[in-house]
Amino acid sequence: MRFRRGLIAAAAFWGLLAAAASAQEEQEYRPAEGPGLGAAEVRAAILGYHLSGEVVGGEGAWSECIDPEGRTWWRMEDFVSQGRVEVKSDGQACFRYSHTQFRREVCWTMRREGSGEGERLRFDLVNGDSLPLVVTARRKVASCPGDGPMA
Image (tube, rainbow, N blue to C red; front, side, top):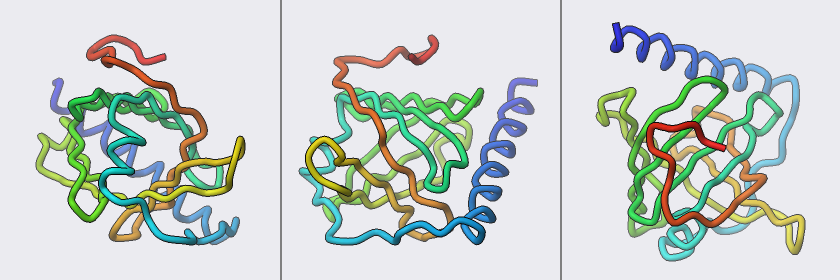
């Protein structure tokens, strides 16, 4: 039963991303500009932070707590999955989650958009089959909530 709920939740998540991709045709967004962040910059930007943001185009909010060791707790609407992130030497942040039994690796490049108070982090999927994610809030954490609710 637990496995079945996980499959249903995963299908719902990928359905949301597909809906977001179709919305891309209706609502243009600006392609990523400038160089991506290097490995050290990515580690400094995400490890030990609770991130929250949106899918570009306004198609959903998400949050992810990433502890200093790279363990993650990700939420999109009511779906929550534990995971792990590895930052590769080329700066790609590659995530694996429990809802895929850690078998599927999803890698993103990161870059900064804007400057000063308006600066945001942007994640672009390496294989490009999803809309980008933008970090709208970021706060430092020493640990993540694990199985409890994420704020």
